[in-house]
Image (spheres, rainbow, N blue to C red):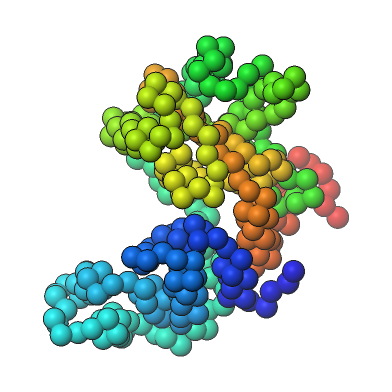
Amino acid sequence: MCYDSGEDFAHDVLNSASGDYLAEFLRQVRCSLPATRTHRILLERCMKYVEEPLLTRDYVLRNKKDLGDIYKRKHGKQATGSWGVKKLIEKITEDVDEEALEDVSFEQDVMNTIVAQMCLPHLSDAAKEACEKGHEMEPVYSKHLMKLSKEKRIPLVIEDISSVGIVEKSGESQTKASVDRILGISEDGDSKLCLCEFKARVKQLQAQKEQDRIHLLRGNDLMGEDDIFVEMNADDPLSYLGIAKPDECLQVLHHAYTYSMSECLHAVGDTRELMSVCKMTFSQELLESYGRVLVLLYNAGLNILCPLAVKYYLLRWGVGTS
């Protein structure tokens, strides 16, 4: 299906989305959720955000208190108490060039984001050490995962654990992924592959947050008191307890989509061993929607980078390009 604009695409996706997806959409654009979360109300709020002019889109669904805080951060003083929501938005956006914003197309917005993200930020020594430690822990986690399988503490009969490089999705050369490990598992007498992404929480505060998440899983009867494994569906309203960080949830979704699979393991550990293993399953509807998003972004600007990348690698390996 072709769309004339990003807004048309957003309308199509939102109209076919479940209430859980609509609520997550509002969370991701940092808009407050309504007290009554019926499908109709959630859809109305999402549509209001999408249809709002760019100038006021970031503010239209925020409450008065949040807008007051934004005004104070911007101007360094308290807003006048008598101002309502509409007035606060006017004051927050009064020095913004509305015409310049309206002239920015969806494609240009994508390109601006691409350019902004092309250079990786400089990592501090502490951040580099944490990254290195995370990579060092992957073999340790692999051994622990195999041990958990042999002890039958997880419902997976693991036969082999392998490392792989970058994999390209069949039929979509622009879609690639690099998963940490691929497991060979036995299920009902048959062998199959299972994707696995490891995450290391090497700092004490990070590990404590994971313990708090695991406590919530057990408190909601999603994980047994002595268990380490949880199986969840991304459609579940409590799926954020399985994978708390949105970027990590998006990463395992991307792995599953690239490999044309419906599930992926997300295993979190500290500096010694694994703390939890979540098997996240994605519905076919979600995978197809994600694929449409990738195509939209690719056609909106990412496609100009792919020929350059191909040419770079051809030249690198001494292959003629003429």
